[in-house]
Length: 222
Image (cartoon, rainbow, N blue to C red; front, side, top):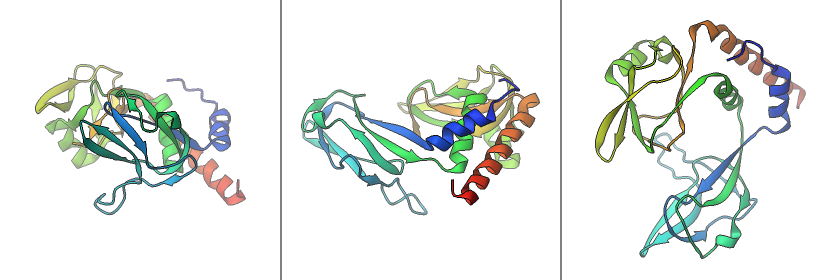
């Protein structure tokens, strides 16, 4: 992680294109029927208990079993593989892209992902912090938890088996947590972002600069 960051370049990129482009894939083999069109607005799951499902995106049918896939992020359908309508697709086939407007908090997290050490999920599975780490997070928050290579910090739950996951990145403190306990995470998706303790002032500088810049531009109507 470098101490020198070109804030103007980074912030300029987000001002010119303040979106995240979320690709949607088929989760298994089946016949596709789209339920949205390009340009449609979609909503993510909502409600106090996340009980209101997101906008239906498509149906995928395999062996007469039809599964409806709903949006997990809000935004606009920016592109679609209309050529796949009514056809069988393989698992992992890209079906559409949703253009999600980034909020200030999301932009900060996106920038931090470029400078923190990101520890990814080794497999598609559900994850939990180890009991010791979870206890420390509940008492003082994740940034009070120091980690070093070899530490058992996360439990992976896969096929009804719990397996310890050992940290193998830079020594530091847990700055950001990207998963929800018990919710499936895709292989390679970030689990935590770790910051070496001597870099914490740099991280705070990033957060302060982005907040100030974003608020100023919002006031100016930019």
